[in-house]
Amino acid sequence: MSAAMRSLVIPVSDMGAAKKVYTAVLGDPHTDTPS
Image 1 (cartoon, rainbow, N blue to C red):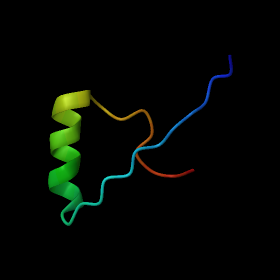
Image 2: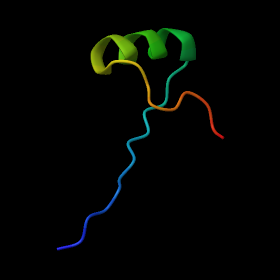
Image 3: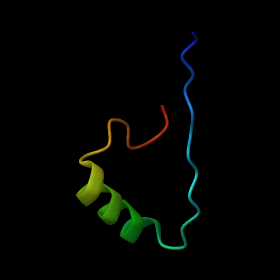
């Protein structure tokens, strides 16, 4: 059995509002900006 990472991309029109919703549901993001 192999483990795989998967990404879910959900397009949004207002990034600030989307970030507030996802932070409320999932908690603070591990990484907020690309390194």
